[in-house]
Image 1: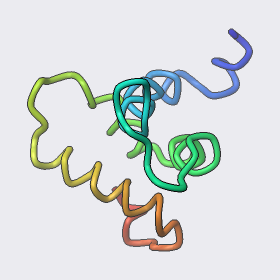
Image 2 (image 1 turned 30 degrees about the vertical axis):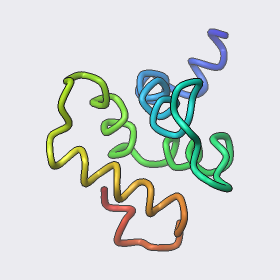
Image 3 (image 1 turned 180 degrees about the vertical axis):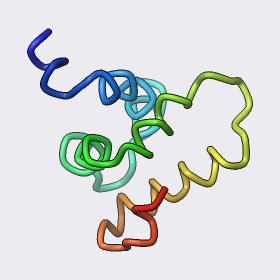
Length: 89
């Protein structure tokens, strides 16, 4: 387990809980046709802004408008990974 954490890095590890809850877990439905390990995890491991976004998810009860917009852009990026405008989130 420690080897996985070292390989992924501390920022990715901290963001995994937010990503897991947003992309589908026991109490949240998953996105249609989008797997965690291929799409969402790849975006998470390659984009520092997405890592920070998922670290912030769950810190407050209410989502601020900025975080809501970032989550929306992430969802669009899952379905259209070639949209480079969305990579700036």
